[in-house]
Length: 496
Ligand SMILES: *Cc1c(COP(=O)(O)O)cnc(C)c1O
Image (cartoon, rainbow, N blue to C red):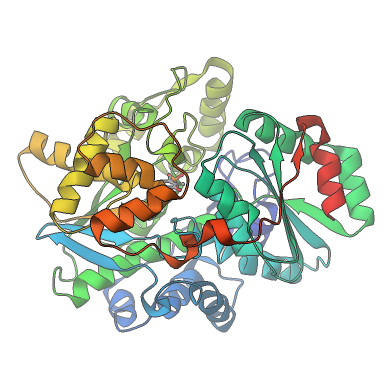
């Protein structure tokens, strides 16, 4: 299987090269030229298997220059780090027509673990396959969750190192503790004196610094990123949609062919795009419901065909979805234009020059045929958390957004279709807001209560703090250095 750029101006590459390169040379994102077919017998054969086996079989459809046994080894290594390796992404029943797919049982309690535990294996194998013996240094600027998940994924993986920069006053106490207590001989974490943009711009400067690249090359090191535009982060996410369908078949909730809707709390559009690829490959998915918080740029896009990033940025109780430019939309545009690289290029140029673009009529029609969309505010999110708790299930804020958007849609349409809601984080990662929601508050709590919020959530709900988040304050704080934005490069080189 070959991969091409969404912008159509780069040569086709193998799956391992797509993972190695991350971004295509023309600035586009890699997409498969054609998709494998998922049919009834393929899915039914997955049903009796554990998660790692399901993953290896699905991955081998999309990563044709990796062998099945290789993929199985990587998937076992990745998902052995989950709470229940056989059932790494369990599907739970909320009501007759609503299920949740729990994607947060990995080492950092957020759904990014599903891909970031596997990516280091895919990436180091891609280097071997392409004859590269350099060490890879992963460079991440983070506003919270991605940094920790990447640290946990790459920690002590041979042939790799990772450096994470986070804004000194821009992450929660829990997120900061998670990062600065990270174990591993190949990891480094720095606070940046500034906000997230300062950290992100510093990382971008390092990536575009030719002299730095030369110095690193002489030490046999190459820089890479772990962000969600890499195909190696997208493909592990296709797995769990198919796995969820197996779970519904196993529990006799669905039979083969039953159309299941998926509702996904969306930020950078990676998670929901993986569901779109599963649907395009033949999984019987009805439609994909894209749920946004008050940063509702995607709701507007999917319901009007116009993407407009020129709007006020809002800080919400679901910070991992506080995004105005959802990079993976570019892949959707490529798929819905029939891989028309010129058309995608023009839309992306309009987005960066004018801040907006409008999709052609037929693309809009295809969007409407595959997607529904909605958004909600913090009060709606809190209401959904209370309602879910009434059904016996504790939800985080991001999943709360999805649950609320789903219920609003069902009310508007006057019908209730079988739907699986992707649940993207442990409620304990956003304990301050979950506590406030359960206490009946409507407005978002902004005070950072540190780790006492976790104890309170546990006490008030009779649930257990997940192991990766318990005792965070008693662990050794390994990384306590803060740097000015202009000193990020020397911090990185010092870490080598
Ligand atoms: C990253 C993240 C999201 C958004 O996922 P995308 O793939 O960027 O759309 C939603 N919820 C949580 C908890 C996340 O960490």
